[in-house]
Length: 387
Image 1 (cartoon, rainbow, N blue to C red):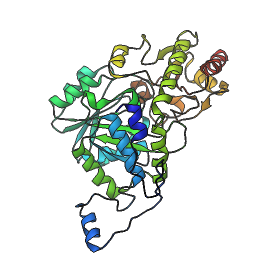
Image 2 (spheres, helix red, strand yellow):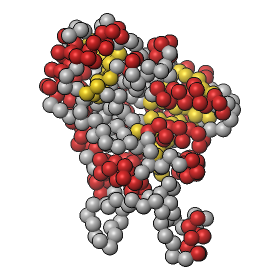
Image 3 (cartoon, rainbow, N blue to C red):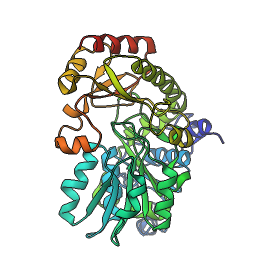
Image 4 (cartoon, rainbow, N blue to C red):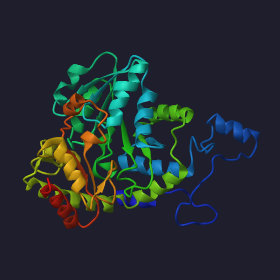
């Protein structure tokens, strides 16, 4: 079946009430027929719900949809995108292991690599997004994982998934891709050799800024390890949030198509503005990785980045002058959002780390929403003119 049909028609079996839409299963636990049923269930001889920290009909439906959309064998859903990132890595890494990662990652992922994993003797080495050809030289005997976001947050750079997949296969490494900006509708990293794909479902998958959620899908053997780790550490997605997210997936394709249409127009506008420079949008021909984006993405997504002439103070003035768009750290909402990463989402990074990740003082990230695009452009224009 086609993506849109799977997104709508993949759902739990109907109960005896014959509901048309999957109901909420707001229960912490489940009952058993007898002692043997209970024993067989806990020993995993039976596949059934035991406790909602492990499985729940709503979380199972949501995870199954994402797995089908990504072409994955299995998956596990989490309370947030960051719990998906942490749990997936922590489940697979041992003391002494080494990660190779793109330098341009979300601020909290950077904190995992630099502040928390070193406590457990897990090390990392970064490569710049334009230095994929140097990855093989960074591989050590203890290297286990290659990790990357594409497009990256917040710089909207694009990494070549096919190249990453070939390197991972050649060296028997696990390739993990954070696919948050693209979603399963625009990009499927598993087709290019990724073993695991992670999403912050809080973003475009929800699409309306309502709930938190995360999910990891991929190779069944790896997901089994992640499941066992998560079953015991408890980062489970709530049934209510899973229900909301599963409903959101029914409209993902039509929503994202409009997001992309609006974002491309915003990017083209920004390229013509005197106070904006280094505009990045994957489907702009001026994007450094335009050809790579066209190869591995259906469309360019909803995120546009650019730099304000005048640095960090000009960036703050621009943010203060915004009237229609929201000032928020979130993205992927129906409402357009502007963020100044240097003073917000990536402010805890040192200035040196920010610059090395391509986050310059005047960088602005725009999450283009579903308002009429002329209104979004008018707001950006007046804010730029106010600098």
